[in-house]
Length: 497
Ligand code: AHR
Image 1 (spheres, rainbow, N blue to C red):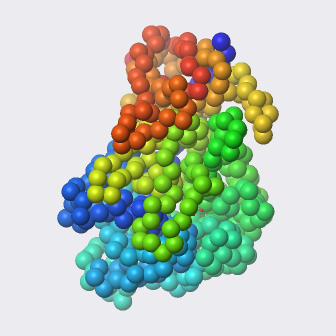
Image 2: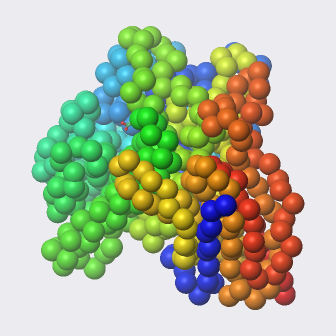
Image 3: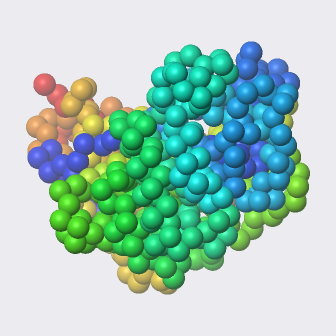
């Protein structure tokens, strides 16, 4: 039997958790839009062609913000192709994914979809082939009330009230050689700053996200972040981060991906703080981790010049869901700097929700940890003091086998503790010390585990990877629980008055 102990003190908070930590992403990519959120011929389509079976699951995930329309797609996208009469919209080649884009959905329809999904839009402007002027026109179309060319065009297109989109991305992954119109850090920094000036002149209430490093594996990291921020520090509110992990052969390495994610966040925060000092700024830069997930990048295939090709349709296993849970904990543990994050993506494309064209909808394994943390990881993020036996990982050496995050919600006096147990061989005797809260009662213990690490949910067996409820342990201050090897846990407590 292995051992681990964790102490959580009510007085030691990391930060208030910004609800935007639980954002997601819909890109015009593969079947995310077409036969994902939108399929007018589907039996569950509403009057606008949106799939209501998908909307129900999106609402269940409690996603407060959804990034749109890309991603790589946005860097060659003309947003004007997606407005006005649908029949008159052009089909275009999408250079990012080698697909054909039919433009049946654009910003106006996406705003409507977000209202139905109880979420907000995080809009991205094209700073690849697009110009700062185009970004300004899009801002005017979306957020200016009336009386100008672009705002009146929105009204003519059926939206009298401004969309009032509050959060905007200044391009996407402009450091990536794969990006349409990729730029050097200095060139992007200048372009982003000029776009930001125009956008904030039009609507000073908006918040802007500049492109940080799209991966710590790029040679330009972290110089990219420094140079971009030196150009944009006063004009932007967030710097973005993107990171995906895949199983490259070592389960130990893969399980402990959260350590790499944590180091990445700390480095970008330190780089931003250096620029803050250098520019004598009073503002602390927020981080938008607006693409994160497990993604089998090396296995991706393309179907050139197809409409809505079935690409990036990763099917997630129990192991993937465990890794994913560890990443969620890292976001919570960095809630003082990460004020927004987007699970990439939401439907069909590396996503928790998977659809059949014309058919059923499925919750993938990663759906569950996301839903649990998004539902219960609210309020304040708390520091966790953890001592655990170590596992040996090829890349990171000996590391503690446990990743833990916790939240305290003042509204209902509840505590949630999220635990990833990476121990691979034996069960772990786990001691959880909550005595600083006075007396508490465990009201829920949910566990995701199983004999087959590679089990996946399918339409034929949709319950292969689902959390199960254990009988809560009786106690009031310190709890002893046996955690099976390779498992994800959510413990919920209420404070006894
Ligand atoms: O989410 C899939 C792709 O990953 C996005 O389009 C891009 O920004 C990133 O490289």
